[in-house]
Length: 339
Length: 169
Image 1 (cartoon, rainbow over the protein chains, first blue to last red):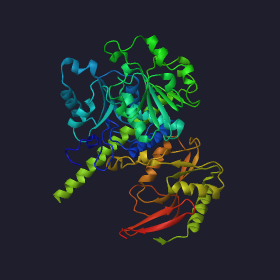
Image 2 (image 1 turned 90 degrees about the horizontal axis):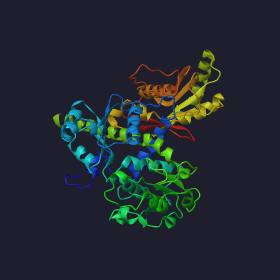
Image 3 (image 1 turned 90 degrees about the vertical axis):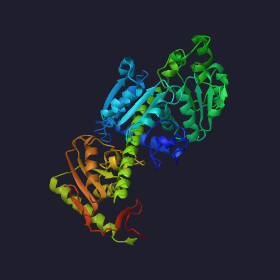
Image 4 (image 1 turned 180 degrees about the vertical axis):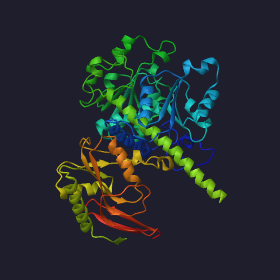
């Protein structure tokens, strides 16, 4: 691999292909994605024990660096780190030093001086975790917990884990992603993962105003009419309407949106009878999804939350392991040069 | 590759040793736990020989290894599965080969995260010596000293056989 390699894997993989940061699913092959899912399966079993803890990250310090608020993602990352026996520091940057004028670089230098081993980063700016991974001290792992409109790779992977649990395969699956694709970093990561893992069709269902301009290039088909789009589906993933990211009026009204793109029992009946219903949360009942569907027998929304802990344990331990193996490798090489 | 041992003879030794220890300690209702992969095959065979009706447990110690900080996470980790409550039980822990003792230390740490067993008996098919920790099996099929270039491996599950590998060949 050369210094001019344009692939993000130059940054997130070690020379022998192990994870050392987890920034994006772009460039990660089916084998590595499957390894992540398999490792997460083993962590699900740990979550069912009387002592839900393994010693992998004992003595390591994980900093949850959230420049944007989140409840579910932050708490499942925190729980994941604790179940790996790491010490966890939660920093809500909105209320801390940056509001006193400290720059991002200075904040990071200070955290590194506290001997942190891993930063879990959420930021409203696309590319912020990449920037941090490029400048951070070698040996420190960066995990992307959602950046701008770019990516949310752990959410996409926990969705893949949930699909595999219920469908036991990806081949032949028809999956639809419904709603606010334009503002969704989750949707991009999901489309990428579903294609890499071999789903037959990834369909996005949304009004034109909530689709990115380059949507077909993402590797999906587009359907504007939800009644048509629900046909033959094995999996339907609802997206949250991101009111806080809307600039100007992209929607006529929430009621209108629900009538056209909300998942009601009637619309769900158009999919395959064993179609599962997913939502990354938090759900807006009566805006994206009818309560009877969210709480119904086809809903796997709460499984997604449980799986989120296991996926985050997998990614954190794999990235930390990659960093440590790399450090060990360099040490051996340096000793070889000196000898 | 050489067929070095009569596997059935080693299994007979393990069974005999385990029966003796269980009798000495007055253990009537043990459960078996095998360490992946070879130990799981052995737990199956030995469980049947001892007439243990309860299904055996399978342990994958990847999350408990003490060399994680040197080599990272084993990418082929499988879920451990203990289909019984370990609390207060008498456990027979089985592995194919014991050497440094580090695998057994990791396995015992993992078992205690499921509950507090009443006792653990350690049985290994082959003892290669070269211990780095104060851990000794209660029962062994056979002891053996290998040359530096030799490795030993249990093949299975059906049929079980032991293979001696000479490196550099």
